[in-house]
Image (cartoon, rainbow, N blue to C red):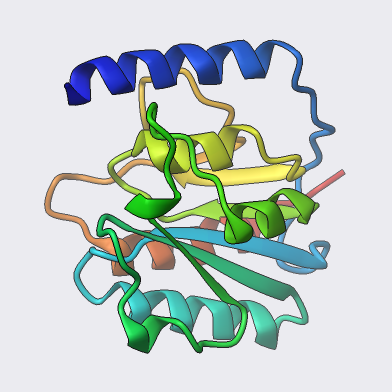
Length: 178
């Protein structure tokens, strides 16, 4: 059944993208004023890595909101009260895996300079958020699937989120926007 849900979800996303447009612009950590970070909360050490990365952005003067996905029906209580952290769970998905709910409505109001996707598995649940974001510069893991990342970081199978974090810091800091 999951295969059918994903097939329909991919078609729905593809149809939504036909009428979606965004303004693109290269940003580095000096030119960006705002960022949205997406991540899969089930990954090893995800909170520690994401919170450290959020701190890095805040130190650069970039306002940052974090959106996490957890593949459970309920959000664990310890995740509910973090400042600037919004969680999406299985209960926030419709039949074809498109996120909905209060956190998603807040996300749709975001218009960041940077969108940083720490989702290494390219989950459809998060691809709805990534691909329909008006962010001017999108960063994520390399994939051969159709995407609209402006900068992709290639990882090997053994690389983890901490490596991705370091690579994003390195490559975005050396970008020279025109």
